[in-house]
Image (tube, rainbow, N blue to C red; front, side):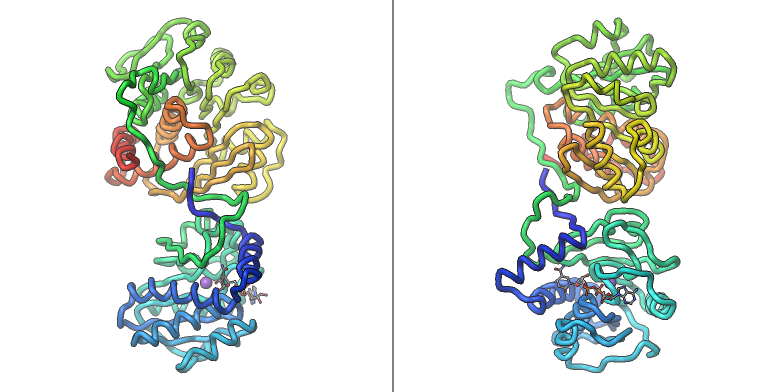
Amino acid sequence: MPGDQILTVAQVREAEQALIDAGSSIDALMQIAGRGAADWIWRMAGRHKVTVLCGPGNNGGDGYVIAEAIRERGGHVVVVAAAQPGTDAAKNARKAFASEVLGPDADVSGHVFVDCLFGSGLTRPLTHDHAELVKRLAATHHRAVAVDLPSGVQSDSGMLLNDDLPRYDFTIALGAWKFAHFLMPAAARVGELRLVPIGIEPVEGAARTVVRPRVHEPPADAHKYTRGLLAVVAGKMPGAAILASMAARGAGAGYVRLFADRMDNVPVDVVVDTGILSEVLSDDRNRAILVGPGLGRDGEARERLAIALADPVTAVVDADALVLLTPRGLAERAASTIATPHEGELVALERAFDLDGSGTRPERALALARASGMVIVAKGPDTVIAAPDGRLACARSATSWLSTAGTGDVLAGVIASRAASGVPAFEAACEGVWLHGSAARLCPPAFTASALAERIPAALAACL
Ligand SMILES: NC(=O)C1=CN([C@@H]2O[C@H](COP(=O)(O)OP(=O)(O)OC[C@H]3O[C@@H](n4cnc5c(N)ncnc54)[C@H](O)[C@@H]3O)[C@@H](O)[C@H]2O)[C@H](O)CC1
Ligand SMILES: [K+]
């Protein structure tokens, strides 16, 4: 599924170098980046006062370009230099800024504070004076905008190098997204995101953002089986499997069958089958299977999981099934498997697959995908999707109201439904994550998981 690319610092440098080798220059790229950022800031500030804080590197250079572009338009802009420009491009941009530059002790206030202190070149925590300066300027302006990255965050990991730094209203990414725009804790500080393209070419193997999928109407001669039969295996707590089935019903599959010993109070459009699991799963019309929500963790649950994994169709494995899953349980599988762990379940899977759990969330998800052969949806406020072949996608949290019981069951149901509709595993996972987040945005605050499941068709409608 296409999306915008997310690059590491090393990938940005390489891509930037490729542009320079092809005849561009760092100064030219800085002009494109800075002027593009200035367009957004101009829209925010208009003729209100803008203060640009410039650091010593090329992020500071962007700041001088932004300030000059706003000045040329007749805007009211002030530059505060935290340090003298240190790179050639930043020195040139400083020279081209045709107005006064204030020192770090200047007493300034205004409408928009633009943070160009450090960007992707930050390698160590901000000094006390720099951190205090950023905090003071954020406090004396109505809005705070970070250029490329908020100063003080690590680009590749999303870690905060300093405590207690401001939250921004906007972050304007330059050239490409960085992991810190999506990964916690930095993702909670970046505010709304904008991207200024500077001509960077697609980088092979780069991570992508999760974007709205393209979904097609069923063909005119479609029937429930051609649209996809999804088997949902219930267990000890059938409510979770019902919730997943309801969500799956709205995400494209033509037929959702819930396998349970006995089931009361099931919505009419979820079909319950109380037959012997191994017999009903051998139905060769099955296109995908979902196992885990409400499964339980006892011997019977283990048995149900083993039967489900023996089915030669794409399997979505969630909740209790993730705790029961072992490398041996997957050894015989030829079809794709999608696992949807939250942080605790991710740790349990890492242990089961003998991984040490080190590295950033994308690195951990990729290591697990490679070791297990599964597509991993490491869900949370910064959901990361990794495939065994190295593909990687990151999603922004749609809303923190998703932090309620049962939303994970809905996610698993939606992903399974996309897989049952014939979408390959990695793409089904990305589509499911997008639909889940989009449905959450359509819900009023403090929604329940069943309200979320009801909004899935509306989210799907936006993809047609
Ligand atoms: N994406 C692109 O192609 C473009 C990005 N641009 C901007 O350039 C910055 C990255 O520039 P760089 O000079 O590498 O890094 P910084 O500006 O972040 O500054 C790093 C500079 O400061 C030193 N340093 C690192 N940490 C500290 C610290 N805590 N205290 C003091 N000094 C520190 C470090 O050694 C460097 O010398 C990118 O984010 C974009 O904003 C360009 O505009 C071109 C196109
Ligand atoms: K910055």
